[in-house]
Length: 360
Ligand code: NCD
Image (tube, rainbow, N blue to C red):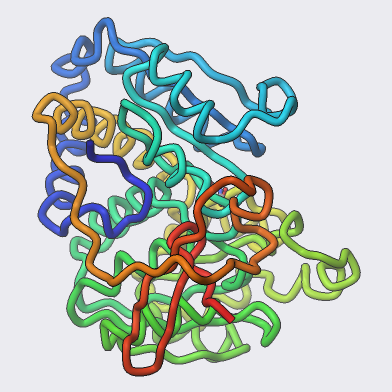
């Protein structure tokens, strides 16, 4: 059964076809109004959300389907200690497809390995957020006309920002992409993103702390919120929270056809005055997200009917290590098997299959 857990679960051709379907839906909504008649989407949100959950729900309604689910962990049996695996099995009997957001990294993958219906990762901890990436790719394609030969700046919380990790993985497969990673030292991208995602692809990148210096060369600027909820110490958040604020003045040095994006919600990192700038695209981005989620639901339900197989595991798996990431789903669900993939045989690099943390 095909699910979407990581953006790399989709081939470039599949992503192109999702973008094409999204454009067609936008132009001819009536053609799609009955495509999911009689189908149900379950939204299992164990963490707060506005855009992602509501755009999934709007997407399913606009396809003629129905939606059930919950929007906080406390109103589900997780509060009583039910495991992700059991929840996934149970909800498989109630819905045709599920979108899951969870604070623990790897939770949607656990669901995918246990459910009988396709699972969509709607954000797992500070790890991945592949449907935001679909929205982002659709925005870039429509606003810049291409997904190749672009200089893309990522600014803010690159450590905990899951939308950044997924978009970097997606961009690493296109040619001519250069990324400029703008963050305070403490919030640089995690090592697995730097070494496996960027390193392996050979994508051109630089790291800097200065937004002003980076701005003039950028075709796309992806601003992000400092992820307060992922910090262990509130003092660290307080110190770093206003590291970057994009203002009208700062934009003076930027290209005239810059595309300014943000997965939202914004806190302080883009001044409201920037909304009127012709380069601001973050509200359009939210709408592209709904069309891409519609295209994704259609795609996964179609694959389910075809009984499509999961992609085979590329790496050697080992079972003699223990994940020490406190945000990994294995930290709360102790009966989950500890499984590591050997991503680099020569240097003996092993990563947890659930959260991708490196084995110590
Ligand atoms: C993002 C998320 O949840 O990771 N929001 C979203 O889904 N659009 C970004 C964020 O919360 O900062």
